[in-house]
Image (cartoon, rainbow, N blue to C red; front, side, top):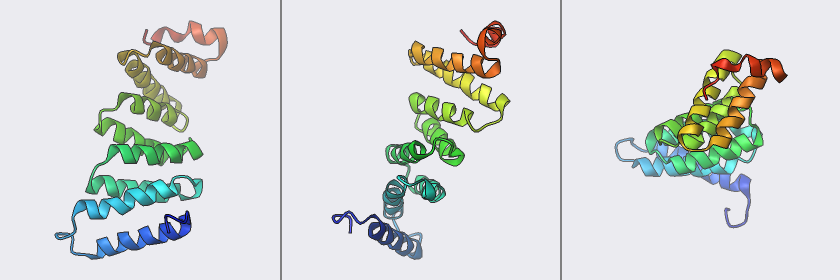
Length: 168
């Protein structure tokens, strides 16, 4: 099915592989046999915003079985490319980034989360993102994030004047 490019048929094959692996005795089923079809199906489904919740479910399961941050990040980034306001996907991306010690990915996740969180929590996330950007040597990104924090707090000159709290 994969060679023919039939995404729906391939998704069906992967769903059956997941069901078969899950039906097997947990003690005998190797984690990679259970995780692999989940990662593949998540990657396949991540191109559609309508399957975002299923992608998150699959990746949470796969990560619990056999962490593969590269594959999880790729699928999550694709899902978030379809809709950057997918909070669950952004939170999972944050978790993957923290667990795998990926500061640039964590910055991206925190910036995405700032769009869906309440203002106070968003400001905390953006502050952490700016600090991480500075720590990784990306001063331009840190400045962009700080400017966003200032503009969201109070647009224009008033925001700049009230930004004494912003980390330099």
